[in-house]
Image (cartoon, rainbow over all chains, first blue to last red):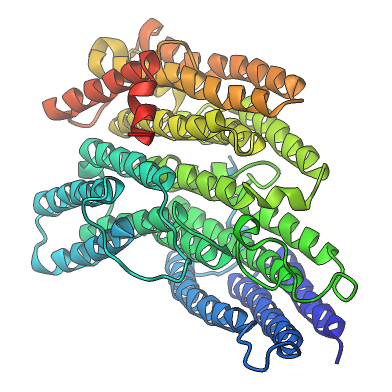
Length: 111
Length: 464
């Protein structure tokens, strides 16, 4: 399958994530959309990894080119997990104080 | 390498110290000594005395410039702890954890000053920002703090997603995560199969997310709310050391990447600088709360630091960036230390401070003069160096004129605070102020003036 298909798929997922972040009002759903963005990137990295590896294998049968993108995906997963733990803690903290996870709550600082 | 390992270890030490003791003074002292140890470890690496020898396969490359930046950041953190550590212990109950998080941020600073490649850039920026989300929300019962924390977290995570997309697209185009200067744009895939617009789109996305991290316009909108809502001690930390580190990451990653964009690069940076300076300076004029005014002023100062980005690779701009980091950190830490001692953060809260607490008023005055860039203070030479760097890079006369005019605007809102302190009557309520605090403030003011008269006292360290 051509790499373009993967690029379109990932950009579509990424855009769904962005639209979700910009339009949804529930903090948890916004957060899920951010995760969707990160996972779109993971998919894209893996696809690129395969493409670069296939291209390199043509010249060198034992080539390891492309493996660093797969490593990068693991780093993204770990960092995303750390962000999830911090983010959910923040959302829980907010819920305890106002009994709501609505983003519209975030207007108090304006004035 | 030393700084990364020692700061991470110190963070763990701080967490454990919270188990063994709840005595705030002891924890505070451990943290202050810890920063000194960190500074010493970093200096040892700088002078080749001792460094951990770990093969990172070129993911991390320590250079003198980065090590020197670490020294400035850790020195500023030391001053910050001396002035404000007792206020950190008043924020909440889990005192040791705040210091632990500060050390983890410092670990991020060390990674940012030595990354080589986009993987480590990503890790460094994340280590820098994740502890800050927690510190912003440290005041758990305060709704403003909650709101700031959630807002910062959602926006920060969003910009991380954008940054990763940028990195992935750049990887697709070039086939490696290296910086352009040491890898070259050597795509495994030839240009006919892979259109270079992937690379251009990636660089633009990376630019947008880095502008977000340093709060450069048009991605600055989170800054005033977050800085205003966070506990003041932590605002002081993240608007100085963290912001300077973010700016260093910005400059280092684009130092050679910019050629991808060709002539468009200058249009983009011009736009970022002008809007950042305009929005920061003009909006700050209308603020009634000094804390919020300082948040906008920090946007404006970011605009000046962007000149170092504009003047890619000129020696004077690199020196200017270091000097700017030092001058700006010193001045802002000291003005925030004074602000924390006041009960009322509005401009009226400063009325008559000079009569009641002449030392605090004096230190605040010196810091504000430095922030506005009056000669004989460190801020003047910092601004001079970055503007001179932009001048050397060429073709930017109108930009420099705009910057100088807006610096004149900034004098107005900084001087309003000085006017309130010296020429208005009032009786501001303050927290108890110790003699040591006053002495430290005088020391910082002296440092600002010394740097203003003799900037090479700091910069010559870069070469010896």
